[in-house]
Length: 416
Image (cartoon, rainbow, N blue to C red; front, top):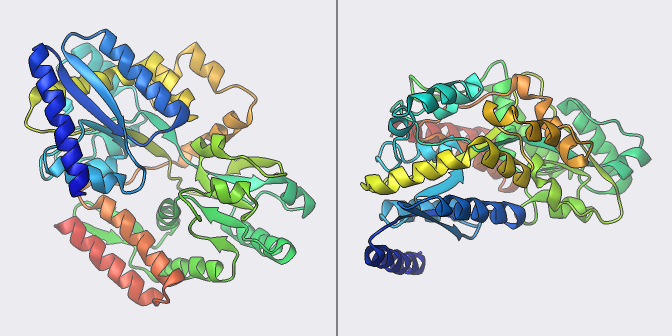
């Protein structure tokens, strides 16, 4: 980490001196972990934005995926971090109490025409639950694309075993038992075990997630302990794989190590099946669905020029035509009504392709999609719930002990 910070310091120094020498543009940096088409489009968007500017210069810097958020936290708190990263509202919430994220509200609402359009541009749940859901009532993040978890499954294998696509977790378990018995492999993996456990919590009538007023979690229940134990048991029997052998399950799925997995619709281009056909379907969900709205978080270093420059790029990036190109690059849905109204977007989501089928598998649950509170400690809650499941599944910790520690750590993080 010291080496990383030293390199970043040197880079910041060089860029600062260059900007000083030119006496012109304020540099805005974006750190990201995108690859392939996403990286290419982000770099193009920055170049196109820069071509229109005489005040700001946006620079796009690729970073390693492993440890990215931890490295960003260290760099931001040291004053040498990026101006923009792409993440969720819950990640932005981790910086609010320390004043390390920019207040985008003052820029948005300084422009009456844009403010009026903006207030009508997003679904109510996203606007109130995420964009305007921070504890200080300011805006620190804006969504750029909507994805969500869907089911990828080995269609060749499902056809061979006469399995139907599951719509409930009971049906999923039954399929996995047949697959394990007949083929000796796990039936299901989880790219984001965290989001699935959150969905279990939200669909459990006896549980709730975060009580913003009391700053406590509401899932210290017998029903959730039973669900955690069920996940651990499914892992022990070889019916589920709770974690991939690498970063994502697309590799394990493509090589036939697992018959299906729940992962982002944006993961479709990374699947290269070895001798089988695959298909997509909505994940099991009855009353609540964890759609994902990811977008730019803008940090603040007591430098209004940098914050304003970062906002200007973000505003450009979420504009209709630019946003359309971005959602196509990441194989996602557009969160903004101004993008959804474009003829090009309507054509994009009406194509008869597997990629669009993946998007439709997300759209099938958007009527029950919900957001979770973007408060300080929310990121820790995410980490703690999945750590508890893994402790039970892999380390032999009792569900009572693991879940009690999880609840205690979550409450401490929310109240700190």
